[in-house]
Image (cartoon, rainbow, N blue to C red; front, top):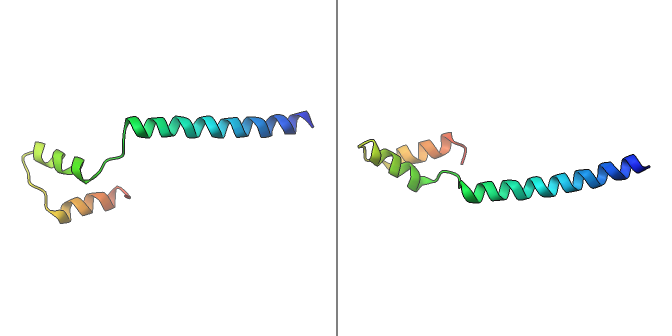
Length: 62
């Protein structure tokens, strides 16, 4: 019985702290967006078309 209660409490605490950790990491390092892709292309000396930007965003799964 104690083992079951311990597992439930441990799972709940693990979920809570993992969620909090991931939210903090996403806030510190936001996922890449279209503005960042444009900046990378400009640093390489290229002007990206909208089709290229959409293609990159699609390939990244966003």
